[in-house]
Image (tube, rainbow, N blue to C red; front, side, top):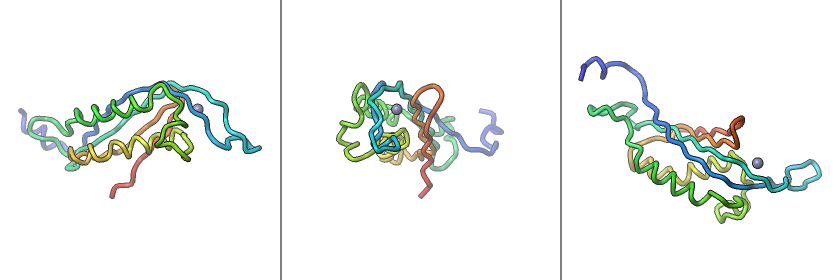
Length: 139
Ligand SMILES: [Zn+2]
């Protein structure tokens, strides 16, 4: 490989994504304190990961995302085709896009860590025009 490739400063981000179809409703959403009606979304999840060393191996790979992708798909199966409010993990949790992003973060953190990756951002789209983005503070 051309040795100058390794000298270009910068950080690599890997993006993996998935989608699910589920319903939810938000608690005490309206001014009178009533809940939002149940409705569905075509959700999309985007995960941005970087290697802990922020670099790239000699083989040109910064972060091997295979294990994280498998874990992401297992999470997607848990939250797909359901009423999110009824999931055990969302008991007493308002199932907003923000909280769903944190749910994915909690589920994926250990696999990312084991593979020496850092989750930089998780986006949860409710549809094509709106998403919530969770950016964890680095520890
Ligand atoms: Zn909604």
